[in-house]
Length: 210
Image 1 (cartoon, one colour):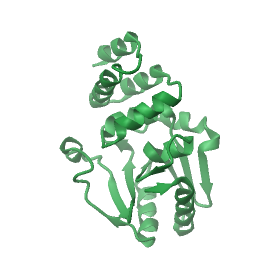
Image 2 (image 1 turned 45 degrees about the horizontal axis):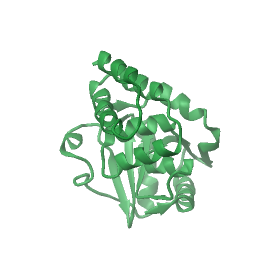
Image 3 (image 1 turned 135 degrees about the vertical axis):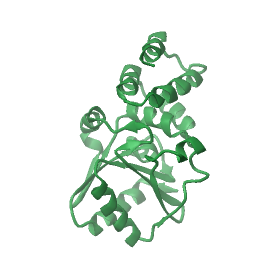
Image 4 (image 1 turned 60 degrees about the horizontal axis):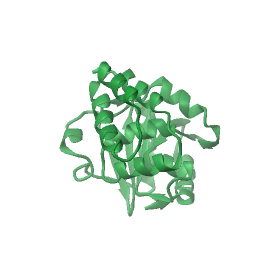
């Protein structure tokens, strides 16, 4: 597990090892710590727009002792079959899940990037490394897609703490080219409606898209 200050210190160290400017986007537990909704995380979830940026990031964390590890036991078999699965690197109790352009079937869209820019207080800049945090709506969508242990519990925790715009989440799922994003979201929403109110119109909109 890694706490926020430790994570910030780690990002600063990584920045000192990187030879050119890199921009990446944080989601999952990493983002929830920046929002103040989580004290620690094991999975440092990051997505890159460019292969070269991810490659340079990997070179930096490798210098810091992180080793590549298998995804087996972390993601289900359906996710493991996808070409867009992440590269995973681990050191002690800390782990990076590094995605490129897509989180499995879900693309990092320009709309997601624009929503992340709206939260300037969650954009971290260390010399060559910029970490921008995705919106809470996009975090919920992506946690519906990754479906790892504790992802559903994180969604529940987030819904209990803040107001969520379900229209943004549903529209983003529909915007995705792959129907699996909408199906993953629908499955999560069906579970959530047992505990939280989600308007029927959001389900209807999702169903009409698939």
